Length: 177
Image (cartoon, rainbow, N blue to C red; front, side, top):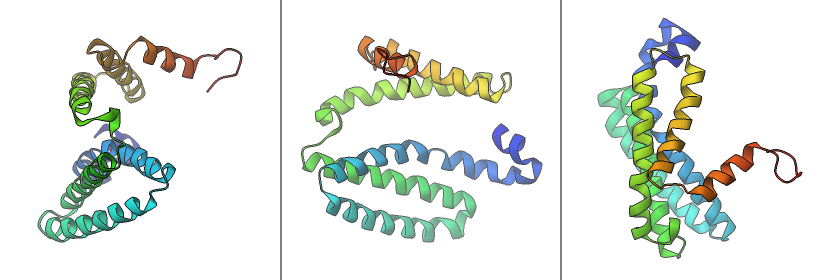
């Protein structure tokens, strides 16, 4: 809400709910990019073509069903559903060809709750402080809360923290990232 009102003003207030819905698709988009790159690196572009075809079908059908009934909010919901379907298909095909995230469904079932806990804590932090803090400070501190929560639930370990730190500090004289 604050982003829309700060950047565009009251004239764009009607776009707040669709943007809030659409913002959930970002989680799936980032993961979909990873799988797209995986399939390309494995020379399995045919999988990408199949996923894209089904993705297109899900998008068209969900838009036909949701937009007439819910308007721009329906379009946002359709986008989230489509990206989720894309991720589900990529997970299934990734598993079929032996390239599952973390190696197995069991490991994924252990990792996802940890990531969800970090996300939930970050969300609570944002909800609590959104009216109090400057938006830039809120975003940067929320990322810190997420990383700290992941560390607490052992979603990341000391080696991961070292890698993150190395990404921002000089790395053995090789410069900075």
